[in-house]
Image (cartoon, rainbow, N blue to C red; front, side):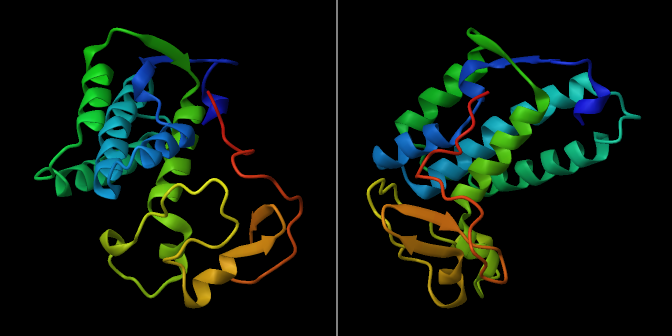
Length: 192
C-alpha cells in the first residue's frame, strides 16, 4: 500500500485512536476485561479504517481489502454492543471521538498496529487450538516477568512458545524451528 502514496505520506487521526500493544498491556495491568479490550480494539479500528478509506481512491488495489477489514471490525464491535463498558475504555473512546488532539500517522503503521493488537487479543493459541469459536479464546493477562507460555495454551499450541532463560521467542506456526534472533519482551513494539 505504501507505493500508492507519496513518500512519508501521513494521515491525521485522533491521538487516542492509535491503539498500540503498550496501550493494551497497560489496560490489562489495570484489569480491564478481555471483552472490553476487544470492543475497544474494534471500535477504534473501525474509525481508523474509515479514515484510511477516505484517503484511498476506489480504484486503489487496497480498497477492497480495507473495506473487508472494516466490515469484520463492525461485526466484532456489534457482538459486544450489549457489553458493560469499562470506564477506562469509555474514556478512551470519548477522547478518540472528540477530535481534539490529532497526530499524523502513516496508513501502513495504522494497519500494523491493528494487526499486532488483534494478534495479542485473540492470541496465538486460537490459531493452533481446536477452538472454532474465536470468542472462546482467552486473553493472556499481562505478566511482564513471566517466561512461561500463557496458561490457556495447551497441547499443540504450546509449541508456539519456547522457554529460554529470560527471553521468549515465538516459534513458527506449524513446525518448531530455531529462532533467528531472540528478542526480550516488548522489544518489537512499534510506535507510529
